[in-house]
Image (cartoon, rainbow, N blue to C red; front, side, top):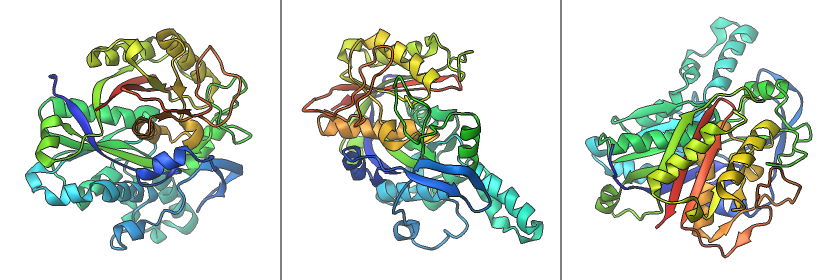
Length: 399
C-alpha cells in the first residue's frame, strides 16, 4: 500500500432521484415520492408497501434492445448506469488499459433466484427459460458489464450487507493503491425485490406507515429503495493522462467488522464505528474539526440509529449530519454509494440537503432537516454502519 492520490473523475447514477448524475442534485431538492407496491410476477405481499422505486426507466432507450430480453432488473440498472457515465471511456481505451469493474450489492440476485424457482413450481420445470438461470448468480450484473464493455482487467462483486457499495469503493481504492490497475469503475447496486420486502416486513423493520424518519424519536422502521450509483476512481496521474476533470479526492477510508449483541445486531457501544471514523480521518491526515458535514446511513430503525447518533455526537459534537435515505429510501447495498453521490452533489452546489421534515431527534444528533445553503465544504465524511457488523467510513475532499 502507498500514498497514491486517488480521485473521482466520473459519476453515474440511476435511482428514485432520477436518471443520471445530474438528477441526483435536482432530486435532493424535491419532495420524496414513494410508491405503493404489492404484486410481483409470482407472489404478492400481505399489504401495500411503500418503496422508493426508479421511475421512467426505459433500459432499451439507453442500451438498445439487443440482448436485454433475458436480463433481470439489477443487470439492466447496472448496464444502463455504465452506459450513461462511462461508455466513451471504455470504448476509447485499448483492451489492456480498460478500467476494472467492482460492484457492491447485498441482494443482487435474490429476485432472480426466487422467480426462477417459483417459475419451475408454478409452470413446471420444462417451462422455465434456462437463459434466466444466469441471473441467479450474485455477480451476474458485474459479469454482464465486463462482457458488454470488454473489460477483462477486473471483475469483482462485493457483498457486505448494507455496506456493499461503500466497501466496493474501498476495495477499488486498495486495488489501485496496490498497483494492479490505475482506474476502476465502482459503486453499489440494489433492486426492489419481493423476497427482500417480505423478509424486512416479517422482521418488523419496515415502517407500517411507510415513512422513513432517520434519527427520529418516534421512528417506526425504514422504507426500501433501489438504484445503482457508480464512480470512476483512478490515480491522479491517470486522470491527468486522460484529461479527465477531477470531481473530488478520496482522502481517507476504513472498514472494520464489529458484530454486537444489540438490536437488531449493532454493537451498541459503537466501537467499530468509532474506529473506522478515526482511521479514515487518520489516513486523510485531518482532525475531526476539519470535517464540514457528516453523511449518515441512518434509516429509521431505532437500534441502529441510536448507536449511530451516539457515535457521531461523541466524535463531532454538533456538526451537521445529513441523512439522505429520507429522500432515497434505504437501497441497502446500493445506498452508501448513492449517499456518496448525494454528498458530492451537495459539495458542488455549496449546500447540505435536509430531510425536508423537522422532528424530535435522539442522542443530540444535529440532523439537517432544512437544507443549509451557501455552505462551502472542503471535507465530507460518509459513513455506513450496518446490523451485520460492518462499519465503513470514507473521507471525500473538495478539489
